[in-house]
Image (cartoon, rainbow, N blue to C red; front, side, top):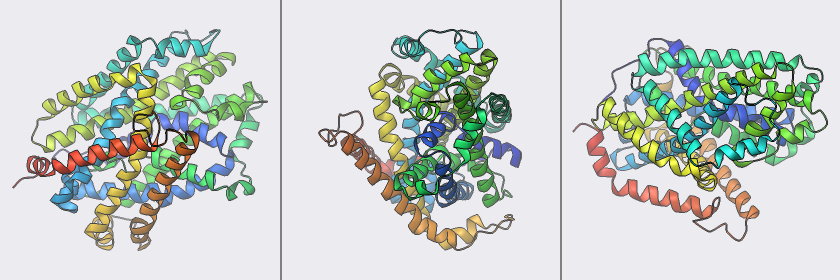
Length: 485
């Protein structure tokens, strides 16, 4: 059924879509990637790819949702053709598969917010043991996974205006205030300026390292929400007079501003508390980046004056970021089922029960969590490619002039958009997928082909192929359930 509800204002839409883009990746992945890739040198390609990847895809998703007023499946059926609706099914499924384990991550954030707020993170002797005792306990991660998905569903069941928009009107400003307070407190610490210098001082020699450019492209692909189908879903509820290019620019820049605020807070704190090894500690990789967030951050904050308040603010901000992203994933899945003629209540019940059940393996097994994060994180690249294909099939120039440069747009997008969608986005997808496959094959040359390995080329290709074959086979049935005759 075609959506009829609308966001009440541009402010409500912008905050909600920034809620999609701003997630745990901004707060825990971005600082680690910056530290591991030259500090300030990383920021230059990161900003460049904001305009070469993120903003073009954000504009595209806005225009697709606004044009069709359907979720990912209906949008692809209308724009590309009913025979290729399976592409939209794949895009929706990737975001849904991520939701199953992202709810677990949101549960981790809630757990540590509770620990910080009750003072239990202060004075801990072994933060690694605290983390392990929680994540390996079996029932505790399931409990907090349940709390996270329940909170998200309670918000989404109230609808777009009274639920999603109202929640983000609180979550996002609160998140920004918390991060600004944390950043201001951190830069006042003795030695914090060294962290700021590391974060904002580029080394021109680093810009010749292709790995930094690939990591910058990857960060844009993963942390802005572009190409996920989430922005397309929220765009279903856009008012007709919304300015697509301006909204896309505000969201891209807003998302990156949050990443920088988080990095300022973390780098300033780390260089103040452990000046000799700060960059190395921040850049240390770990399963799902938990090494920095749930082990080192509590340890650092516990050593600083006002550590109780600072740690509470940090994990409250992390929880808000996780929830704002989680509710967008819930809405994406719900919208698809509503397009298939289910009521919001019935669709949400299906999404809720499925997420509760299918999130349990990631809650109890770190290896399963990493496998799903690897498979569907890389799968997002295919989602971005399919969205570009939809526009190419429709006609890139026609899509730009009719759907992006609408009469209500104050900013008019030039023909450069056509070239980015036709050539740059597909090329970036191919390069990223090859790069990550190469990386994992070099890291484990004996198991790169193994479809049952935790992180391998084989497991990606096996799961992607199985999903695509299923969606192609069921394509006609899905389309008949989604679109009116």
